[in-house]
Length: 240
Image 1: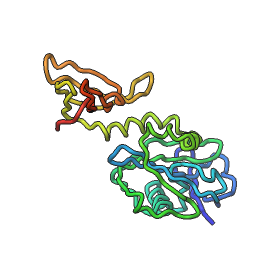
Image 2: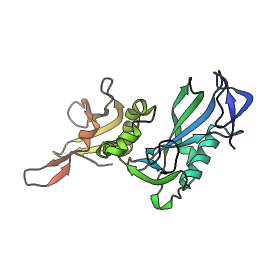
Image 3: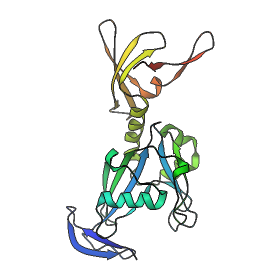
Image 4: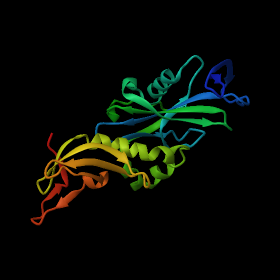
């Protein structure tokens, strides 16, 4: 039996508790935690739920669950990851990407992003919860029809998706000096989201001439170019 602490609309503990499965009292909320992971390749980690799960069996999803009585947000998310995937998340390299209030269902959810490398072979799945896990680049998610469809069921997916793409590209395109395949040098100063399309963009300046500043879609920055002699090279290659 799971016992949950209850919070008020200002996220203050009320001193009340409830049992999982019972209706959440009106005006009260229980704490839910979700965890997403981003590795050094810019890949995101998703787990496939066990086929025996009552809710969303066999679907790709994030790691998560409800805080137990006495747990705060960080303690609860660490426990959930350890239970379901068998490793300890690096709380020092994480942040809450968004907090979602489910007014009608009575929950408040913290969604964490962890910057952490973990080998799939080092994970130990909780059999009744998880049957598989996969690291995947954000742009490759939509090459897998099932994974794309499953993740679309996450209530905050559309809201969080652009920021996950941005954080992935920040890993893959760090600030530094890059050489264009034609020879010129450029300084990457950072990445941002396009205000209308929410596409990740690279902000950079030329290290020659008048030092003009430019913006280019991040997906183009990493493209391969076919040279006249047939060789394929990166459009931009980091120098330092």
